[in-house]
Amino acid sequence: MKLYNSLTKEKEGFRSRQPGVVKMYHCGPTVYDYVHIGNLRSFLLGDIVRRSFEFLGYEVKQVMNITDVGHLVSDGDDGDDKMTKGLKREGKDITIDNMLALATTYVDAFTQDLTDMNIRTPHHLPRASEHIQEDIDMITTLEQKGFTYTTSDGVYFDTAQMADYGKLGGLNLDNDSEGRITENTEKRQLADFALWKFDAKLGWESPWGQGFPGWHIECSGMATKYLGSQFDIHTGGADLRSVHHNNEIAQSECATGCSPFVTYWLHGEMLNVQGEKLSKSTGGNITLNTLREKGFSPLAYRYLALQTHYRSPMNFSWEVLQAADNGLHNIYRDIMRLREHATTTHGCVSGNYREDFAAKIEDNFNLPQALAIFHDMLKSDLSDADKLITAYELDTVLGLGLEDYEGKEVLVNQELQELLDKRKAARDAKDFAESDRLRDAIADMGYTISDVDGEQHLEKK
Ligand code: AMP
Ligand code: ZN
Image (cartoon, rainbow, N blue to C red; front, side, top):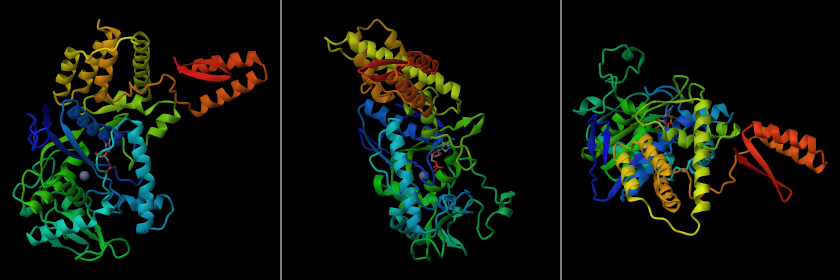
């Protein structure tokens, strides 16, 4: 396995700390709203890494945090936190109880989205609000070792005390730059960041006063608790690399005294819409529900996302999603046909295709090329039984749900449902001209309809 390490900026051979076991951490969602399909692209990366290592015979231990407190709107430690923003948006009082209840709503929606996209649930999904003590313990250690100072609004990490602060790159460490003027003037260095923010109204008790932990320390606290002081892989969107991840490294390495905190850092590139990063804070909010309302299944989006390498930006449009949806249904049709032909013999996994496929995922998770091998296999002269079983095997990484596909899964959006209801009413009234007209309208939307035992059955054309 070779993977591109953002820390060394090189493609490196993979060696886990413990033979045969991969321990990894993924930055999860801030649950003040539904996750959008950009967030889901970054969570898909974690899933691809997990499925790939499992395909190659490793045991994987996977942790993804849920940020339900402490993530400020600005990376510069200013402004509201995002959960408060969510409470204001929903007209709720700003209390810890309301904050946690709001979070629970969106955690439930998030875990459902993971399931619907066939993203395997990480072994641990710790919530930041349930790990405040871990944060306090780590900040206490940092304080004892001389890495902190206190200002009027919080406890800060003193980046000047760490010789190799910022080693993931991407930071402006020039203290005389313009940012200095607009930033918190009590900070000793521009890059210093909050470990604990004081808040008299909202928060938890701590040795420094009531308040809440900084967003960065939460990830260090939870990663260390579940994976230890040092582990193999950390993933997240590329937008988190320079500030959030440099700060995670700083806190963790200075507190534990162990370096490196993480051996391999993997960063997923952004999902863009019309050239702009999809972002909740700038109002972009395409969620899986938006897709469902337009009649697309979450797996069509998964299939689309697999077609772009995780290190390349991806452009989303409804046209490319439609093309992916058509492509996925072609695969499903092939699978149905193979099942019909392969009823009597149980096939064998093709060793050659498995090897070629493995070579692509071992090359820094090259899913677009792995998909090409999968398609070559479907077109090959393998027997139908061998093709079917090989397709199922490769799908343990692709996650397109081939083995579970039942041939009748069609997402019915509101428009389609109305046509179906009207057609049923027309048939009940024996108005066959109207029923045929509605059948044509449904066909124009890309579906064929058949009537079995008085029920209407839809299939994607
Ligand atoms: P957040 O909920 O803002 O904490 O983000 C959760 C994850 O989604 C992080 O790993 C982000 O880097 C990632 N992310 C946010 N926006 C995008 C985007 N447009 N494309 C890909 N990943 C994103
Ligand atoms: Zn994080």
